[in-house]
Image (cartoon, rainbow, N blue to C red):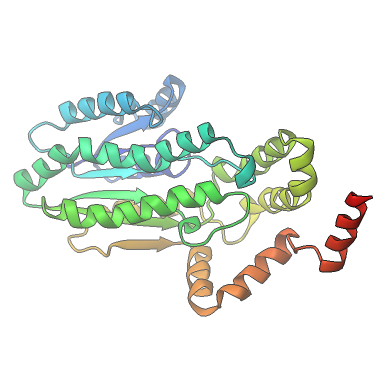
Amino acid sequence: MNSLAFVTGAGSGLGRATALEFARKGWRVIAGVRTGADAQSLKREAPEIVPIQIDLSDPANILRAAAEVERLSGPQGLAVLCNAAGYAIYGPIEHTTPEDVVRLFQVLTFGPTQLASALRPALARHRSATGKKSKILNVTSWASMDATPFVGYYAAAKAALLRLTQAQMYEFGHFGIDVIAIVPGLMKTSFVTRASSEIEGAISSLSPEALRDYGAPMRRLARLSATADSNALAAPPSWIARGLVALSGRRRLRPQYNFGVDTWLVVAMNRLLPFWALRRIKVAMFGLEPPSLTAANNRSAHDLQ
């Protein structure tokens, strides 16, 4: 019997491409999707894939989905769990609601680790049944290594997932399970193509005070995002998916794999440049220069009049 992979976020983007690549390579595939429409679309393209609905923002739903994967995995267990679901929120830290932050961390950080814990028996059973290590592939982002204005909470959630992945590597290694961080860069997916409109939506929801303070730099981010999908550095998700499936068949793995030229550029810049230089680049890029002392004094004097 062929090995079994469970891929979350399979309704679109990298998750969908990875589920399809696993199926193309002859794996049995369970695809975690959010909606029935996503499930039907995936089945039309690859009838052999088994879609199940999972909502990573709901801990109870995660446990129900994990129980279904446990049932489907049978005596041979689960060979690969690929946590590829995700989304982003945009906006200044001080104007982001706690509710939005909690949901983001639940989907990007707590959900994947809860799912991995719930499926740990199925993953360990694969090792016992086949003598081969099972694998957890946690998809993070180069944002986990390099913060950018107005996506701070997304970067923080991905950075937390990166560190938890490293901790899981030690803990789950005890059961013959490899836990690997996957760090992709820009991809030609709806995640990227939606970003500009989502940033514009975030700008429109700002209060007048917040718009005065942050509107112009956020519009710069929106303009940058509008051209991201045509960026020569943006990789097709199918290319990264092929890499993930190839890693799933290896016996020896590194704890982290970086995909994309832009990811390696971020790594190199953070290793070679001092923080003050990185800060200067981003301050200039987003127009976040601090006001001059003279301008600040003039404003203070005006306020006293």
